[in-house]
Image (cartoon, rainbow, N blue to C red):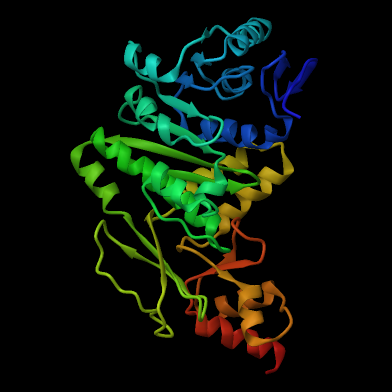
Length: 367
């Protein structure tokens, strides 16, 4: 997997791979999502920098399917650049393919882009400054992280070094990792006097990907910085929440049971998704079924930080599982927001206290 030596068709693109050039067909769904996002969010005839082009498939699809007018594709690997250039020609894409390091390009670039796509191998953290140098007010950034073991807390010291944040290594790790990633982008953007508006945020399989809009100005940068904070998790009752602020008041006790909580962060504490954008993306048509279901879940997911793991609740109560749909409906009946989450198939997002969830579980089990 990863090397395609014969013609590969995806969307409207026809790609021929090459020796030493990476292409993962399993990531078609994520590329479908990226195309849908740009169709719904980017300006007409937008300019885009694909800063890690490989075969050039993303830039080609953005031109063919999302309306990109100017496509610049970079890759530090000369074999990849030659391959991408051939694929641009074969697909009749009038773009520029360059064999150049992103850091050097960002210093020399004569223009700034409407959209920048950053999809490196591993952590995007070392490259955020570079993509911000070629961005402007209103630019869209699409940033992928595949160092999920780091962001999810399996390598906590690496997360501290790369992202300046302490992760958590339990069922909340994917959402916490995604919020750490967004928080890192916010902190770096503030150095450029820019604020960050998250528009779509995904954590799936081996990757995390965030789609954000940059807004120029000191007040925008400061406003985004104020959305940072810390996550808190109670191992006793499984409550999770946030303390909002760059230096929030330190509260180490659970607001529900009074036991000491586990702290993690800095994280982004605000809304992860723009419902208008996710709704428009669904209307635009996402060919990949798994990705379409993921965006559909995002469109319905309550916008509250973190979720409740139902197996954790039932295990603490010493009972068997309950139907999650019934729990959600009863929570809604009590006036709470409730729904499933993309971060965990056994999780429920709700603004209800854990005690009310426990009460409903007991009702359903007759205990």
